[in-house]
Image: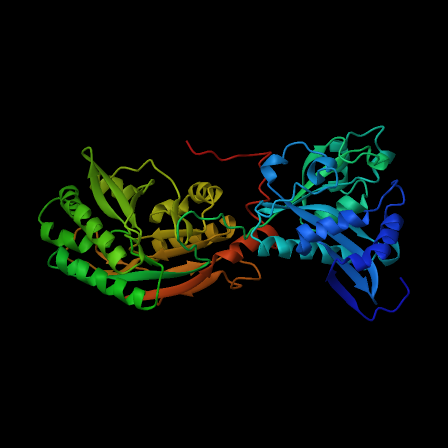
Amino acid sequence: MSTEIENIELQFLSLDDYQELKEAMIEAYSSLENSYWHEEQLARLINLFPEGQVVIKINGQLAGCALSIILDYKDFEDHHTYADVTAGSTFTTHDPNGDRLYGIDVFIKPSFRGLRLGRRLYDYRKELCERLNLKGIAFGGRMPNYHTHSGELSPKEYIACVKRKEINDPVLNFQIANDFHPAKILKGYLKGDHNSGEFAVLMEWDNIYYEKPREKASSQKTVVRLGLVQWQMRRYHNRKELMEQAEFFIDALTTYRADFALFPEFFNAPLMAENNHLSEPDAIRELAMHTEPIVKQFSELAISYNINIITGSMPEVRDELLYNVGYLCRRDGSVERYEKLHVTPDEAKVWGMQGGRVLKTFDTDCGKIGILICYDSEFPELSRLLADEGMDILFVPFLTDTQNGYSRVRNCAQARAIENECYVAIAGSVGNLPKVHNMDIQYAQSMVFTPCDFAFPSNGIKAEATPNTEMILLADVDLGLLRELNKFGSVRNLKDRRKDLFRLEKR
């Protein structure tokens, strides 16, 4: 276009635009007969869904248009035709309470092509979809170049060639470049579309911000405040003193309106001092006697302080076997258990501890979380399985005696954040316990890790505690950034996995 552009405007469609719109459609769809809307049809559309009908004007002249309706998509997501979704151009299929924006037309007048106006129209649809909290956008995409290859390629093969850039299809290329993905082939979609062989590609775009309507009053937070307790190992005379210290930290975290409190692995180990005269296996089994009442008190604290508590880990005896377990005490009063799956050689040799068997994610009012105890974070398969279940935040309570051991946990935890596109919080203990066998010294630096992309810290570290110092660490993490990363990141580790070559299964 050689005309100098003075003004570009996106406007809602008006019937005053009809004559100009009709002429633009005839020009844009020159290969199709009767390729324009009648005035009464547009009047019906505008009356039903005015926000869904927009035009672009350049210097006051109509340059493009996008028309859409809302569908209850379960009625149409299998095979359908253009006549089906538009109800024969009567649009009685439009459902204001539906869950999907369906594009029924979009075009740019030929004399205005090359100005990326189509992208503006698609961006408007995406913004509208997000604003109306719809699951996504769908439409039947034409394949106007397919007729030149229909003799040797099926529609499916044709699309594969377009995706591999072996064939240039300007319509499909444009749609894929705008984050729409082919879902299926629709046969007989648009009657009279001979260039496409009457085939169409069902193109879909998913709204990553969609929130399922809730039946009860509740809120799903998108910015979550994590509270990590870097716990000082010291002498406690009894469980009451230990839990008073735990409550002190919980109180401090809730003063800053934290959503989670994360305690370290074996934070209650000081209570073993009273049984230091016993053998190590007997002493830790005595420590396990405290686990049930500690969990009960943590649950009460979670309710009274309105905070989700991850209890680190504690020894627990079940069916005469010793496990390393922890509990998620939600602020609504519910409690769930998690297990350490990989015990260290020292835990097995000195204490006779067994590895657990249950790996799962947990739903919370702050997203879906996973919890792996210390050594488990060094096995990437575990966190990948949790990521496949939709984990947003991975919590890792740990206990390490040397800087070498800490470095293993720290570096593996940071790798888990990058490869699984999630946040990872690690919390450990510091100090020493001279009166407890096999628990002499501790080294820790609690941290919160993020993926490494433009929306996050360049080094992937959101917050870090002072090494070997008792303190709390607070950090805000934005779950919305994870959705954007998964869809639009510089790299997409979850999405780009070669599942045609390998797969990971949970038994």
